[in-house]
Image (tube, rainbow, N blue to C red; front, side):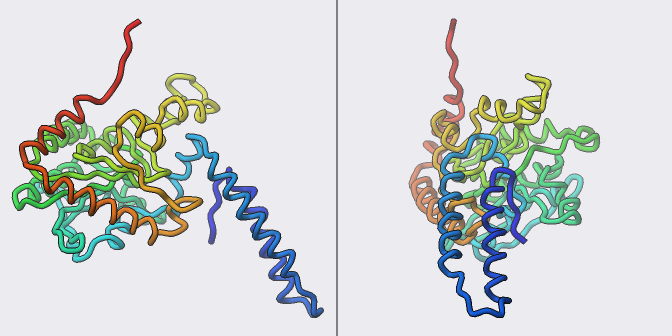
Length: 320
């Protein structure tokens, strides 16, 4: 069943009329053709889609990044890599199913893949904790990244989370410390690290696997220190300010690239990645291969120095 976001309602209405017309043509006992009318509606649908998706604001892109049909980390892993062998557990507390990872092959190149994983239905979302990892998730990710460092394997991280889990259990097991350790240790990895924001890039939960030599982002993904909802609640004390907050945060791919917070934008098909997973996966794969080729030709010393300089240079300020 097709799912439509609020701003897609004009397309949904036209699609409903188109289906009714096709159904009427199939069931009518009269030899009447509606092909001309069908062609006109199909053209109108395409024009409406192009108009809507060529003028998306920041809040609409956030909604698209959260689309329930959008591909998740494991979808891309199975499309892009071969021989994926998932690894489990942090060797300290347990296995967090919101964080996945393991060995894989990018054509002939062996890599370590990690990423946050959401669920498709209620049962899976409970298992995946809605893509919000506990401390053991970040410790598992770090364990896998250190293993990759030991065996000189490049690391690919897929980011898609509203944020790390903020519950009591996570606080008791030191979620802030787990993320902080990841930030420190990822800076010291001697192998290439590539991070890709494929949906939501929420706060420290995203940054906990996002310290990378190259940070890529899908066209309709976002990367932010706080959600637009949280920002609106804190600054404006009003949920009606969510669109204003989304724009003020400068969290869309093009805005992030202008601020040099991401390195490259990977395009999506009209309407979002959920409309053609194969095309998006192929785009990610080709970008990964070219980016990795460049990073693998860089010495370990330069790799670490460039990574450090990259993150030290982030941010701008002006003096009054």
